[in-house]
Image (cartoon, rainbow, N blue to C red; front, side):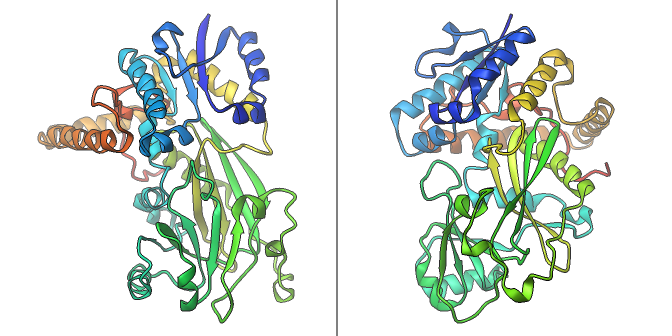
Length: 393
């Protein structure tokens, strides 16, 4: 019987009712095992798949916590010594979503023009100063206009990650708490579309959001995004002003969402993540305003979907779960091979880039070079080297 190992906090385990997931696993011939990351995993396996929610631990490791560093090192050591294990999701992939500035940059790096202007990221800039003049310069350089939403740079692992503020004017700049990300506020009739991704599938859940605003002479509004967007939210921020109540919130385009999810899966090399999307009033433009690793999955049958994903990747090991049909995989890989032949120095450049990335991560997480595994070092849900630009799909 194949083993599926998992690690998450007790709070997360209870919230997801992971005990029932164990029953689903047993019914289809594999065993769910709770991993102890403080001891070597080799004594607990062998594992065919490892599922984890380690965002808080990653934050603690970055802050120098020795216990957290040991946990990350034990996982990475097992992955290095067992290259056949499928990790959902690789640590390096998750790291892309730990910082909002970095995650927004990842989305922005996609060739969004291929969506014919239907998908964008609101203009944003990371602020690391309290100097009002410097902040105004940064905002102007990056076309961030009032009002804008101020979010903490750290997206996971902090009590402040969901504490936000809406800044309406220059006087409000004194309310910024760096490091933070300033993101232009987009009017969307208080309607949020949460996209939950589980492997090849995604689910759309509507939630309340923040009402329409314009720049002006008003005080900064502070709020918690969890409170404002929970299903039963009764915040004053959810209540549209009378002038806006005749407008219906626009719905996202299913085909646009499908393509965006496919592209992001390849770009991030991840199976479990969520997107927060709003659709701008009048224009219908889809804006990605946040992206999260292993979200709460409230409102969907997550465990059944996760079980289907795990069952699929255990039954189809040869596809390597690259999020693409097999034919497209081959086409992209052949293109990659052709690029290697035409540009023989590219592989050395890529190797050098990987080396620099490992050095950076060793410093961030306090790990030795032998502890650190990049996504392409091991097998994961989408670990092939593919072109992540937007191909015609």
